[in-house]
Length: 364
Image 1 (cartoon, rainbow, N blue to C red):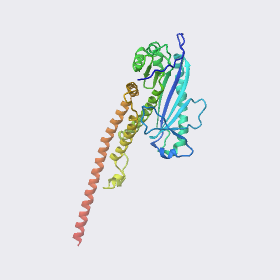
Image 2 (tube, helix red, strand yellow; image 1 turned 90 degrees about the vertical axis):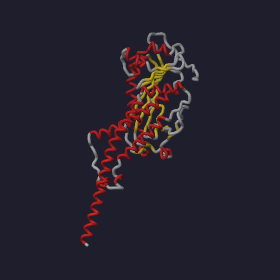
Image 3 (cartoon, rainbow, N blue to C red; image 1 turned 60 degrees about the vertical axis):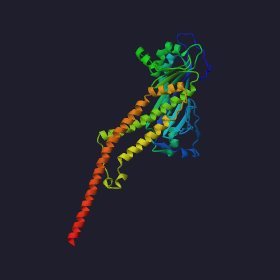
Image 4 (cartoon, rainbow, N blue to C red; image 1 turned 60 degrees about the horizontal axis):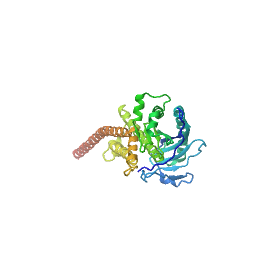
C-alpha cells in the first residue's frame, strides 16, 4: 500500500497559475568496454562510494558513486556514477517556479545547457578513471532522459491538472514551445498512470511528467531506464557496423595460417568471435534486466513496464537479437568456407606425402 504524504504548495487563482518543482536530467555515456572496479577502489587519488539503492533494486552489479572533479558552483549536479560495463551516468536537479507556458519556453534552453554541461563533467571523470577502463573511448554513445516534477497542490487532482493543462504537459514532454494538435496531445496523455486521486504520471519517450508527492523512488527507474537505453543503442550500433562491413563486402584478407589445420582457429574463428560478442551482450543485458525486483508492488511494476514500452527498449532488444541471427548465418557461411579450404589443404598434404613416398620407393 502506498502511504500518503501531505506536501502541498499554494496555487494561484489566475488563468496562468505558478507551479514549482524540479527538472531532473539523467545523462549517460558509454566510455569503454569495461571498468576494473577492483583496482579502482584501491586507487589513492580517486574517491568512490557504494551506491545506496531503493528496495526495488538488487544489491549486486551496482555502480560506484564517484566524486565529480572541478564541479562548477551552479551546475546543479546531484550525483555521478560509474558502471562496471564501461558507462558514466550524471544526474542534475534544476528547480523552477513559473507557469507551465513559461517552462515550455525555458525547457529547451535548460536541456541544451545541461547536455553541454554533462559532456564536460563526464569527460573530467573519464580522464580520471581512464587507466582503469578496458578499451577507453570518450565516448561511444550518449543517452539523455528528462523528468519534469511538479510539487503537489492539495486543491488540484491529477485528473484536473491533466484536463486543464494537457496541452502544456504534452508540449513539455516533446520539448516543443508551440502547442501540439489535439491528436498528438491525446496520444501523449494516453500514457498516464496514478495511484491516489491527486497523482499523475505521464511517461513519454524523451521525458516524463510527475505530479506525485512520493516521486523520489520513481527517479531511480528513469535513471536506470536511461542506462538500459544507452547500452542497447551501443550494441545495436556495434552490430550495425559489423553488418555494414559485410554488406559492403569489405572482407578481411585472411593470413595463410588461418587455413592450417589445428592452429587455424587461432587466426580466424568467426563463430568463436560471434559467441564472445553474444556473451558480452547477454551478460550486460541480463544484469540490467534482472536488477529490478518488485515483489508484489504492482503499481511500480506498471510504471516500469510503461517506461520500457515508451522508451521502446523491447524493440531495441529484438533488433539486436535479429542482427545477431543474421551475423550468425553469415559467419557460419564463412566458417564452412574456411573449413572446406582446410579440408582441401589436408587432402593436398596427404596426396603430396603419398607421392613423395612413391617417388622415394621408385628411387630405391
